[in-house]
Amino acid sequence: MSESINVLGEKLETCGKDPITGFYRDGCCNVGPDDFGLHAVCAVVTDEFLEFSKARGNDLSTPRPEFGFEGLKAGDSWCLCAARWQEAFDAGCAPRVRLRATHQAALEKCALDDLKTQGTDLS
Image (cartoon, rainbow, N blue to C red; front, side, top):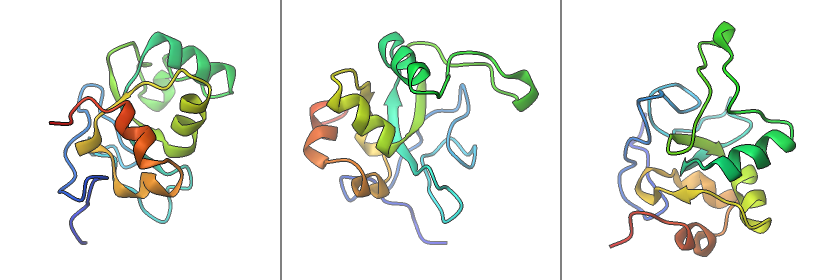
């Protein structure tokens, strides 16, 4: 498997280990052919975004112990579906993004300039 690359063209960094995130639950926003939701955007979720996502049918804040999911709270880093992040951005409630931990595949659904406006790790 080749090295994963972020939206800045660098090696993909870890997004979050507590809670463990990523489609593959490896702490990174790695994507693959079985990740139909393209969980590529490493976001630091907010209460506003969690409410937005729940209203759109994806409740990320309610614990689901049957899936080993404790539910997210504001401040958690989480690999979001790229299209959902862009939808939240367009609605004015996108969470901040850790660009170095956001997989380049996010660019299939998200504009780089939009991601950068929410970036937390630009130097």
